[in-house]
Length: 456
Ligand code: NAD
Ligand code: UGA
Image 1 (cartoon, rainbow, N blue to C red):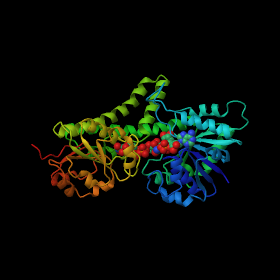
Image 2: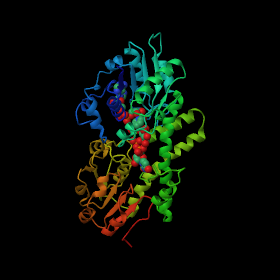
Image 3: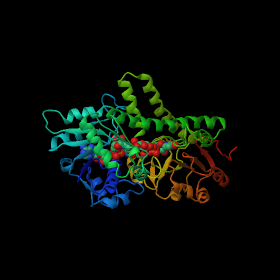
């Protein structure tokens, strides 16, 4: 029986390992983490992350061939294959601060693997890492006269939060990078065979390690670039009277462009887009490629502009003062169907509104616990209210910041009746029916569309 250990029980480690365990009952999968609370939660039905369909997958395999443990050393020692899925945030100190990847967690894992292993192992980079990280890892793993052989593979993860289970069950592709040596190819084949249990072989792409590492950063950069591109156009739509949804539809029907990732918004969030682009920028700069670095940096700059522009629109339309005005924030997660708030554009929007002395009431169906932790410095200016009707009661404005489908189904007449007039609605996701809202009496502002106003 093949034994897998995954270090890191987060948004990637948990769901990916649960899927492997579900699909491959003959493989024993142990997910380990130093975070005791997280591991304890994985053992209950109150999982540490919200992801539609995840609990069903975990329940199917947990206790059969899927285990969660804080005993990292034992997990590593027992395994034939060790996936490393720890966090790789942007460095906040020293050289490359604000741009490069902080690899301290990764390196700690490599040192631990070397320290406790008593047999040869395949080490799989599941975390998103800079190109040639595998080389550094191999140096750490093989330092000294260690008789044990570690074969490092790159197997980046492409799941998106909110759709993780569907993405894992039926991925567009799985990517595995291995060395072009006999042992590299053998290890690569071992991993291919595991994925081939449920994924058609033609969708399992194999490359060398460096191409695999770089493809992951490139995929995220391209996706984020599309969002920044349509957001750039949204500003022009607002200035010219064009409608960004119509423009996106018109360009998206060109099969060379395609319809996905063309939704204008308050900006992209999430733990990875910004960090991975900045990592790409840092890599370009390290190789003396300043123009490519500038090109990718502008994708992040555009995103920051879009977030700031949204707040400016709110301020200007509410007569340039929002001090002491109650503003209901509907949605705090960085996208729908997740409780994750990392790098959510809502954080920046709330901070700036609070800076104007607004009184904020934040509502979200799944992300309130995380939202509370994001802005401790604003504790006296922010209320958290799970019920959107209570959040909106007495408010001067509503800002929709996450595209939860629940917000499409609210009774907006009831909400309007409970608000201070004029009642403003800022739709940061172009989620709602703006004509209907205008018909009720709202002052409606959306992204990349003209405003609908009853005011002179
Ligand atoms: P996360 O923060 O949710 O989880 C990482 C886990 O690793 C944490 O629980 C932490 O306690 C644990 N950890 C850190 N150091 C450890 C150590 N030395 N020993 C044991 N456990 C340790 O992060 P995530 O969102 O799962 O992302 C992990 C990696 O996957 C990142 O590189 C990210 O870029 C990449 N990725 C994330 C997503 C996503 O949707 N979140 C998608 C694709 C790729
Ligand atoms: C993204 C990628 O889609 C995954 O393939 C990748 O594995 C992952 O990053 C990662 O490496 O972490 P994720 O961040 O979970 O996944 O979610 P996305 O669906 O990509 O959305 C990212 C952000 O862009 C969200 O804030 C979303 O609201 C925004 N977005 C997305 C738009 O504003 N418009 C769009 O058209 C699409």
